[in-house]
Length: 429
Image 1 (cartoon, rainbow, N blue to C red):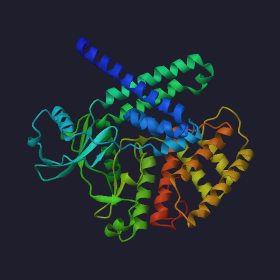
Image 2 (cartoon, helix red, strand yellow):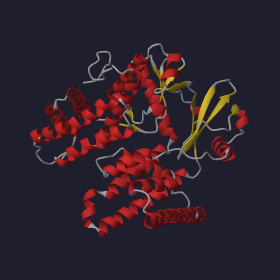
Image 3 (cartoon, one colour):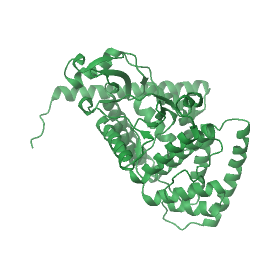
Image 4 (cartoon, rainbow, N blue to C red):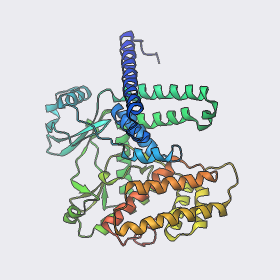
């Protein structure tokens, strides 16, 4: 196969865009640094989070990576980046319309009866619009914003080169594998820009539901004829977020049973699906008008080894009953370590940690458990493990955080539900 011809104009255009983007990044960073030096008005983690939000898609995603990876980043930064918002001002409809025209290469009126120019949502990578096909079917168009992939690539290449330079200037940093971390982030973020891959995830999840005979959960159908690398056309689901208790009652006579259906579906997906949904916050779990649970937004998924899941299950079970020796052995099983671990010492440290968290849980009678509380527990748990030489895979943080999300849902919808002891919940062992 012959190599594609070199196009000097396209090369020049790409190079110019890269230079401009690096200049824009340097300007924002300089402004934030000057603001901090002159005023000292914000804690450094908060200032950095706000700077990331100004810099756009790459840095918002990087902030979310920091928030979900407490084994790699300082606790103050992990907690602050929980607030990193992936909500942006929507682009004008004409801009998004031009993307659709370029992807479909035909008049939109030949495909759609109508498209709502007002977006349902706008995030760093994509904007979502409702549409209706000529068949009368209501769909949703997830449209990638212009130039996002190029910006991600430029930013991440810049970060990779910066990381390599830091490792050369400060050899001690090479042990932290900064450049390898940036390389992993680049792979993850660019995968999120491949909407064909996300569409395949939706297909696989629908196949999983069919093969497992799960009838009380649902995922949108993909309209592949109108789906490209930059546009996903999918069935529109009508429902309410899992945390909107009053609205849920309109569609479900038993919110607790609805939550159990969501739990059973997700637990089953850990071993029976090719991946697990790794971003099931309340906005991505809907109670549909027919009472079923709707799973949406499959841009972030994870994969787990059976041994990791078994260790994590034992960990969560032992956390529930306060059995610290089992908790210690479970953490050792989940993590990677090149040295022998003193399980008894680890158990004692875990007991101290959880006595403090139990006092926090007791205070739930007077206030709501906050995301910061949940993430503080996760961070402290990882820090205790690392103190004893344990290194955790990123999937560990994704899974534990998802369990804690479910715990929040349970406190709202079914306060008496015990996720780890209730026989109606089909956990996998």
